[in-house]
Image (cartoon, rainbow, N blue to C red; front, side):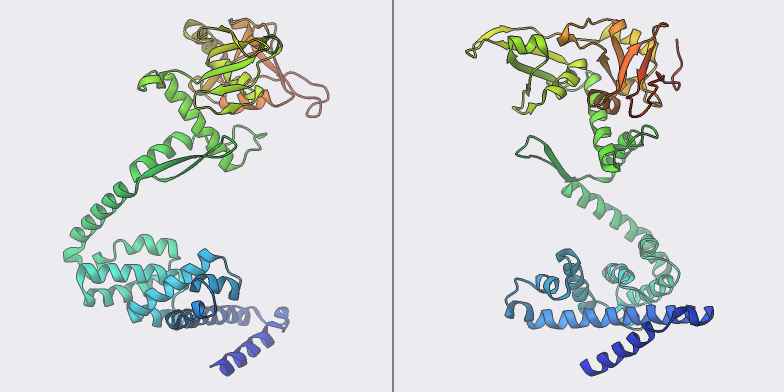
Length: 416
């Protein structure tokens, strides 16, 4: 076996060394098709070898903890990729032999083989071996026309072709089983990291997944041509915006109806100069910059300490820009006022132009609406915001962006 494979390797290497440009187009296309078939045949052979070595326990005999780990070292694969090979090799070994033959003959790819093997197994369970044989023929024929993703979608209705009398009942049973599995497997895990951040992991059922996408997809789009956030960062910020909107409804149970409550612990001098570090009721600490940003639209409970750490004053909650004042702000700005942003008012925070901790007043002339992204951005950038002579906000870009620093306005929202 090794000698024949070595000879084949030599022939392929010799052809690879020839100049492709010297061959006519038709010959190149035929060579591509042949190379692809050889690749699939070799994949089938590789899976057969893996299955045999796994069955013999070669990996553990050579000191590896599993065949997947052994393959990682032997073939320089990732463990997940190696594990998928071991699993597929096992499925093809114990499943319908027709799938193995189709792969070995170069009629299907490895990814298509995974789809076909899963489907044939399901059909055999639902309708018996005769229907499974028919399903194999149909799926192999489809594999010549469709990629693995489309093939998997089509495979859900293969019973319509091979066992139409039970197709509807089987489809309903599969849907019911999937619903039960989704209900059983649904979970959301919140893990606090050592630096105070939160890791979210979980599986959402189809309905909840649809709700989440409907809520965050519109907010996850770039906010403008200057938005440099990655897609993952935009989804993160969109989730925060959804939470802020939910908090503003006032319909959540217990403490959910209020925006974030921040307990700010600082010295008296620090409070008069700027807002110090903050502590959430969960015990997590926030930077002064984060506290100042959240304070724009939150209930603040200042705890002023003496030099000895004794409480001097525990102020009462101070609701900032809410009620009639927020409604007036919405009428004036119409949404996020940052240039180029089209976020509506319900996704916006009220930002103090001159921070209240620095002596700024809580009134219409000292406030502007900003979406979550631009609120964070403004607190960490060199942009400046002010009210122009007509009472509407304008933003002054940093000198590195515009040496002339010409003020800019938002033109997306209707002005009142």
